[in-house]
Length: 114
Length: 111
Image 1 (tube, rainbow over the protein chains, first blue to last red):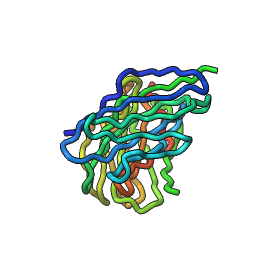
Image 2 (image 1 turned 180 degrees about the vertical axis):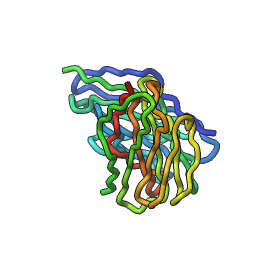
Image 3 (image 1 turned 90 degrees about the vertical axis):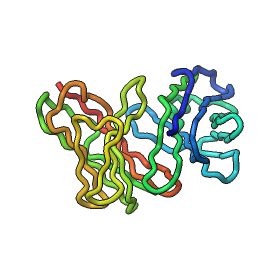
């Protein structure tokens, strides 16, 4: 079985500050890992994914995440927050294979203060 | 680009009505999914399908059914809508490396 933990439900940062959204996972096999972003009243949009290639993954909108197997973590970062980054962010894990499914964390709402 | 469309963005129905939510993808993906999203609960999987006419229950299938007659279309059916089914419904299809692509969502209100 696999699971995802996103601690806390809300993070607030100032515009221009570092964004750090934490994600820890458990998986019995080498996982695929994902970050999705959801803007109000929209579907989820893929930010980035880890699929066992480079451990540092770069995504859209200046976000990146680092896969750390020893810490079972896949934290999302962005050096400088922008007002447009305000959204809900979901981390997800998959074990791979035919007919596999994603397991999502409960999501974190990011607010950006002017 | 992968495109997943959902038949309605907003829907208001009455208790006891039969409700159809439709989802169409244009990438010839075999796997499709229906989720509901509620505040504080994240995304919960209702049903998924890995081929035409094939379906499997997800984590919360009670009160729902699905239909997949064509590869590109996956329908979610609420046989008799209830107020506790008021929610945001998200459809997704799965591409390479387990990547799921989501539609814009349908916000359903059951009165």
